[in-house]
Image (cartoon, rainbow, N blue to C red; front, side, top):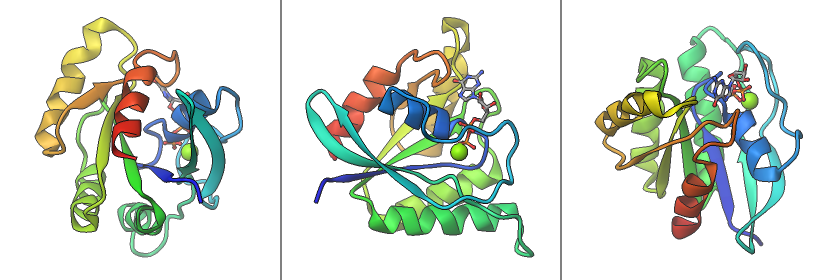
Length: 162
Ligand code: GDP
Ligand code: MG
């Protein structure tokens, strides 16, 4: 089958917005607030002539283990099924414990990871993206999924590892 790119990260960082950007249409459901239960959703996608499957890990539930554990378990299944992972972090918020938890999981998986520093809506916010070097995943690609800024570069990087 086609190579699989899983888009993971804690709720509200802009995963679905970025998936829509890749698809060139509004198919992944964008939520203004976290906590809406939804399954992982796979979409056929194409970038620079390469066809692949992109998986939006939109589903999570706030259960007894807490939000962070749920995010991690959702991401874990998606990562297991993926050939490469696009980790989305909200550069405006910076690194949270939930982000750190997903990163630990990604390290254990051994899968190639591309880091999207999302919500970098203007050049002035690029310093926020640079702070994400601290995650230890290499270069953070500054992206504005909302406006499309930088999305080509991060997708090119994904194609290199997919
Ligand atoms: P998800 O939970 O990670 O899938 O995040 P969503 O894609 O549903 O987005 C959560 C919120 O962040 C929505 O209100 C989006 O409009 C907003 N958002 C997503 N990407 C960006 C971005 O690049 N810049 C800004 N300012 N907001 C964004
Ligand atoms: Mg989503």
